[in-house]
Image 1: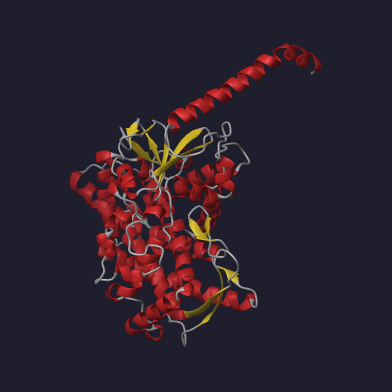
Image 2 (image 1 turned 180 degrees about the vertical axis):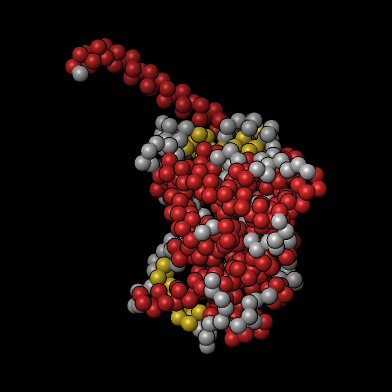
Length: 502
């Protein structure tokens, strides 16, 4: 050891000089990319502001938004990558409209390709992407959605009853809804998307692996044994393997002519028809690819829906007049004592509750940022071009507070037939994205939110455990209330609906 130190000692000044030179070159590279964009003048070597974004993402992105208030965009630097935050709605549309090989690649997560794998719907372009979306379309027909709403209601009821019991047992302490809602949504996704093809044991393993994946989303991308990111990447591979097996089973059963009972069945039924007509399977229809796309659906539905349901509870409690109107509307249309599911027609008749759901999504869009990577130098404005390799973050959250009448006010009436702000300010409502990659399952997501609001408000009385800052935004990675939505629950209805819970 002493010998090694003695050999290196004469080189120390040169090594220090080289290190300082590399730091200087990194700083110069950052400033050249930043140019006139608002943002920090100096950044830490390599890490940049990674520690800030991991430790307190809410404050970090709030600061980026403030920096972007005049120009519509701002710059920063995270783990060796130059990033650009987009605040202005029209600039966000410019990014969404140019997802193609010679402009931008949608990545869903700053290190998404490494985490999600190559066979992923969000990484597709052009005709391949159009063909796959055409294959997926039968998953969201009125018939398919009606099948899903029945499954959704049974699972929602089962979990609401559980939550009421847990709240009673924990009294006088409140219960936190975040993990409970996530468990409900995971069961909903498993049942609606995969149905009978996932055994009880497989569901338990699925839950464990999804937790690994979820934890890794908010960690530094260190792909080494023992680190959360590595655990998440391996968990995704196991999840996709499980979904691949489910896709193969459904494909075989639908080819025999059985009626579909879940999303994968509707998809494989249409695929079986196409194969029967052309005698060849269409592109991107291998079991492994379909398993990967199913994981995309699961990821999109799971955390985004959890966020919306938590904010629905929070906002209904803080706006009692809205809660009163929801309860009045639902009581005119559906009664728990009927022992009937809410039908598709009844769901459509819940106009005000639908408006509440849309306003929840506008006011607190679950995925506030939609990461893209610039494949080329791209002219963003007359005076600034996005450098190739930049991670670009269009902010749908900020767009939700642009254009709308009194945008800082929670006001479901803006989506009424009289005001139609969803039409007038359609370009600002970006919670489901825009362009070729707009969310294909948004009707399913809104149905789930409307059903939850209707059943939660009708079946339960609830009280928020209010503390200082409890409603502040927390990233998990989608946004939720800082206190994880702590509540006290009790039964409101005379009795729960008598529905089959299995």
